[in-house]
Image 1 (cartoon, rainbow over the protein chains, first blue to last red):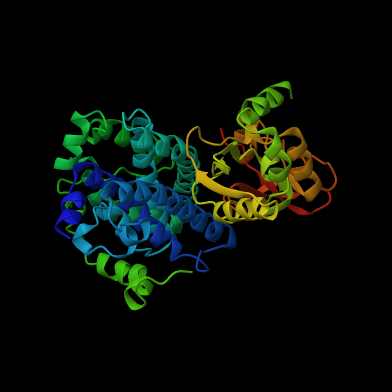
Image 2 (cartoon, rainbow over the protein chains, first blue to last red; image 1 turned 30 degrees about the vertical axis):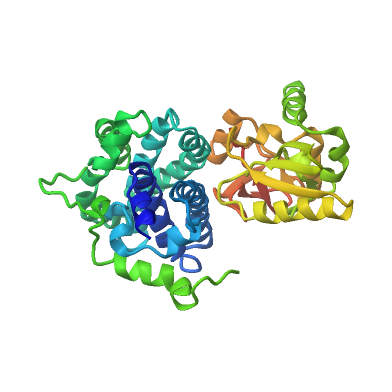
Length: 257
Length: 173
């Protein structure tokens, strides 16, 4: 058991979690829209994106499980960790208040995700590089979808414009965290494995600004930003997400389909 | 088309010719008319110490068909009295260029429009140009209904002449 935790705390494993947990939690949020999307097309789109993200998560967790060893599997990593062991950013755990929120969250995450993968492709770690090269094709498509909807809602009716602006204003507080570096990240950057996220910040805000301008939307300006997820300190939403996500494994340990 | 053929030979060069025929009997569960060989998901197949080792690569990361394909490969070899092992590899990442000309034809016949090249694909999916051919009546007067279709690899279109809805297999590069 002690051995397991030592391996769990390995920098590379922690680094993998910091990338993969974002996709897991966002995938779970998007999955909530299955059968609840505002239209059939958007319902299918959101759940398809969720499926892509879960697929990517599986590759990351399979790799992490191999590194941890013992009886660890992709499933135990996904379903049996405690809240503080998840290293996703706060942005992805924010709820689907309305379609505008889901799109704003997706848009902000997609632009960050694409920038991250563009760099991760060059990782000296062959597995991470391969996963990035595979995922980038899918995430480019997600980015196209969410950017398109930002434009449609922003440049749409007064109602859609106000809703997407409100969602962006509310979620903006979570954007800065994307570019905070954890100790595990710093260690991985120095080994040529990880991506230096602080270097992505400028490009991110520039890309976001361009699309918001095209969409007749205002870029929010705030002084204070919220952070914590990357350290495992989550918002009040996280417990509810995990309760649902982990329900089957907690109730029927080791169950399989 | 020459390009596609060249890609195809690159793709099949690691496949033991003795195993080709058996692998061709395994089909994609989502698109039963298409064998996994035509789909280009088999990266290598060889016999080592009496065991068949097959490497497959997913079309999309989350493609639920991959687990089934893996099981079906093992079953297909079992029926021929051979033990097989399947490994999922990610690199190099799958591209729609690996769908063989025969595979593209099978897709069209099944009612799925086959992938355009990268530039044309973008134009079609942004709704800028009408480039996707209706697999039912052959008209190019088609429109995008949804960027995402019945599976992750497809977008949803409708023909404005015969009015039939259909799937378009998105270009993945």
